[in-house]
Amino acid sequence: MRSLKDAKTLSEFVRNLREGVYITTATGRILDANPAFLEMFGVDSLEQLQDYTAERLLVDPQRRIEELKILERDGAVREFELEIRRPDSHVRTVLDTCFQVSDEQTGETLFHGILVDISDRKLLEQQLRELAIRDPLTGCYNRRFLQEITSELEENDNDWGVILADIDHFKEYNDRFGHSTGDRILVQIGRFLMQEVRAEDPVIRMGGDEFMVLLPRLESRATQEIAERLRRLGPDFAPVSFTLGWAVRQDRERLEETIRRADQLLIHVRVQERDYPPRR
Image (cartoon, rainbow, N blue to C red; front, side, top):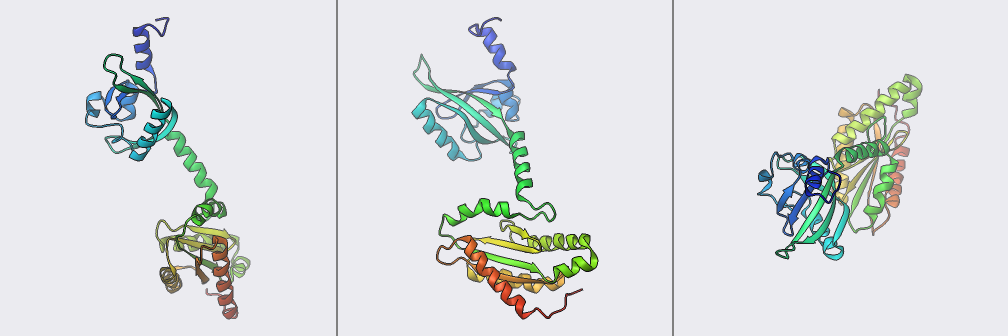
């Protein structure tokens, strides 16, 4: 038990590792694996994985193709991130380090690999990212999130719609009823907007009492219909009155320009309504 060259020592070493060690064929059929690998996939024996290939156990099979290209080119891949879907449908995130070898007797290509489960780390990263891109008061996204997605949005030709919502006379509410009431109004407005748009349409608190709804891949008519629905439902479901402005992307313009045009409409509407008393 003093040398890794000793077969018994090496076998015991692999059996006790907390990382998943495996051997597969080039087609992805699993030939052997250690107990940690089986635990990672939520099974008790190798036989329970006999109907599965490496590709079938991946959330995104395209990642398997990408990994095989690297293996064919370099003969090895290190810390290649994959999402695996276990037979019980649970998803885990792993880092795969794999080496291409040749069976001396048959010449068949095999893969020897080690999987490291980083699911807990990925969950923590996601939680930290959520804290960084969410407004702590309302739960809406914040400007940092908007900055992160802007480049991706502007790279393509897709349309988008922007709806701005500005609470009317918000300073008066704060001055008269206190900041705790003002905070409650902000939370309720944010909740109202999130409930009335699709889950994939981010609601962003731009600052103060101004919110923005971003509508990716929606053209002018659909954006206007959503804005009109918000305006129509506002008196019944929003705690206070608010002013809306909306715009849709034109001629591959930047998102900042679409927001500016939506803001101009909002200001124009507000000038017309400046003498209206705040709704109680």
